[in-house]
Image 1 (tube, rainbow, N blue to C red):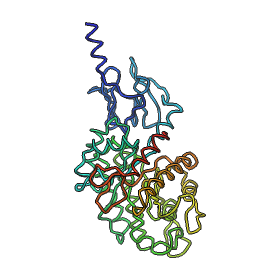
Image 2: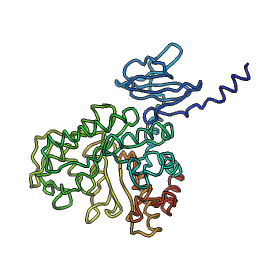
Image 3: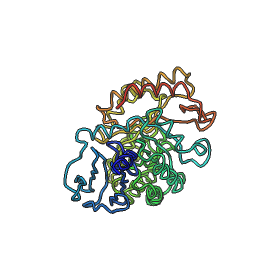
Image 4: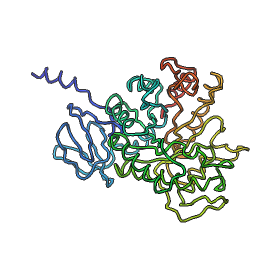
Length: 407
C-alpha cells in the first residue's frame, strides 16, 4: 500500500518554483492538483478555492500556492484557507520580471505561409533552443487572437515563454475622425483581448502607425514634422485600443510603439495631450494618452539608440526614460538583410551586449529581435530560413550570447 502511494507521488509532475499565472495557464502542486485562474477566481482542480477578493496573479513558490489580489494584497493558501502574506519572491520578483528580457518576433497567427504550417510546439522548440522567453506575434482580429490563445493554453502553458500580442488595425483610415478611429480601435481590441484574457499580461497596441505618412517632413523629432490632418485618427485609434483592452481586463498592461527612429516626439505629444498644427509648438488641451510600457522599434540602419541622429548625439533611450518614466521594451530590432552572414552575427552580439549593459540604467525590460523565421525567400531578417529548418550563422550567434549571458 505504502509502496503504491510512493509510486503515485513520484508520478506527479510538479511545476517549477516561480511558475506564475499569467503568463502560464496553470501550475500543478506537489499533490498533483492543477491550479488555474479564471476571471479573478482561483480554482484548485475544479474546486473554487475561495480566494479573498479578485485574484490577478498566482505564483507557485516553495511548494505553496500564493495569490495577489487586484488591490495588491498577497495571500498564501494553507490548511485553513487563505492567510495574508507578502510576495514570496521578495527581491527575486524583479528577477522574475527580467526573465522576459530576451525576446523574439514571429507571425504565429498568420493564416498562410511558413508560420501557418509550423505548429506552435515547433516554434516553441526554436525559441527555447535560443533561450528566448518572450514571443511577439501580430494579430488583426479575433480569429488570429484565438490562435495565440490555443498556443498559450497548449504547448506554451508552463513553458516559461510568454506571448506578446501586437494589435494591427489593418482597416485603419488615417483620414477618419478621432471618434471613428477610436471606435474602430476599441472594438478591435475587445475582440482580440477577449479570447486572450487570463493568458497574457501585456498587449501592444498598434504597429508603426506613425510610418504611414503621419510624419510628412523632417525626422519626426519636431512637432512641425507631423501631418495635422492625420493626427486625430492616429490618436483616436490608439486611445480606442488601450481602452478596449482595459475594458476586457484592466490588469493587462498596454504599450504603444513608433517605427520612425526619431518619432519619440509623437509619443511625447500623445502623453502630454498635444496636437501638431504645422509649427514647432503644438496645441495643448487634448486628452492625454496613458500607457503602461513604452515600446519602440530600432534597426541597424539607424545606428545605435544611444547615439542616434545625423551626428550621433541623440540618446533615444534616455529621452524615453525621462519623458515617461515607464519600463521600455524594444519590440523590434534587427540587422540589415544585405549584411553578410558574418556582419549579421557581429551585429547581434554587439547589440545584445549593448542592451544587456543598459538594462538597469534605462529600465529596459525586453528586447525582441525581428524575426524568428523568414516569411519568404526574399525576406532576410530571420534567424531561420523560410523552410523553417535551416538555421543561419546569426542564429548561432544569438543562441551563444544568451547562453553565456543569462538574466
